[in-house]
Length: 503
Image (cartoon, rainbow, N blue to C red; front, side):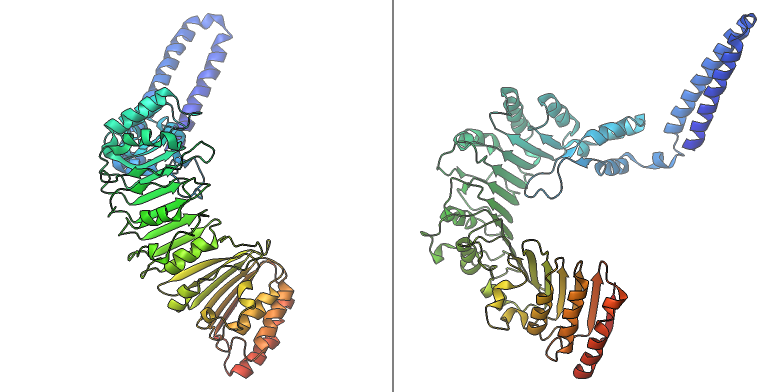
């Protein structure tokens, strides 16, 4: 119906222009010209009225939706200002798509203006003070996400005034609070702002700019005014709670050249979180000389531990071996810094001995011999970074590492050209393998020859029942290389593959 309306309007306007051009050629039709002008004016009024009626009529499908449903649709309309990969930070969206949608019709304008959940992201780093005031008014009493910035180069007195007023009048409805670029000498002055009761606050983040001046004093903070706090994110700074935080379930700590380089302070923070479920550490290079094994607390509910971005081996050893975590089921270790650059990938042997792993996933990117290795079962998983090729750290050890003895399913993704050794290595060390998936991009012939050689050997994959190959440019001649190997393997193993899939 919208298309028909546009055609009618365009045809009527073109007819009006043609008639006016004909009448203007002869001055004798002056009266007719005046009459036509009136008709043209009435026609335009009719078109405008018809458009308004069409936009407001309940028979149009879009107008049958309630304002609440329209609001839910508009909530998905906004574009993220940052990429979703930005971790541990609030991802604020742009209000520009909403402004464009408000220009469609009056009904959409009213639906957007009177839907408080569309105006709940308050960012004093990028938004002007008058914009912040308008957003606070439009959001009504809905929970809000707030980002504050105390950097002297970006914040002015007007911004600080608005921030204080926001925390004084709207602290009760703050859901997420991100305080960034705080200089530590102003931290104690700034923190009284957030001492007001925040019953809805679920996520609190503090970030210290490593380029600012700082002191080594660690601030002590009371979180009694945040009874619903679930996530605490600290970047470049440590805050020490004055009492336990029973509601806290997620803690994210990033060193980032923090002046508070004392691991004992971090352990003291963790000791105040009896309900902690997820712990994520990055860039922690602090000394562990004065930290004893008894200093590590027991986190009985911890189920996920992620250590990434160049934490030292001493820190990793302490948290994997000494931290009490009887319920830990997800362990991720990437970019663990060793004493030398050629050191092999880190292997948490105590965690692997405590869990029987049945699934193996390897991604060998081939770029600077990097990749990831994931071991998992129905209840636990561990992800490791491969800094020097596929399982380099195990090649110099006994021929059958204990964590590969029970693997039944393997998924190997080989993106580089040097995957032949990986296939041979895998075939000789995973005796119980039943399902094998291999994805490759380059070097198809070499990889298929290596796989054929592995299948022809009696001890390679004797229990294999399913094989899937996926390559970007494999030819039938290259795939035919597997036929003799599969025939020999069927005779030796006394059973054929139940499933062979080639993509």
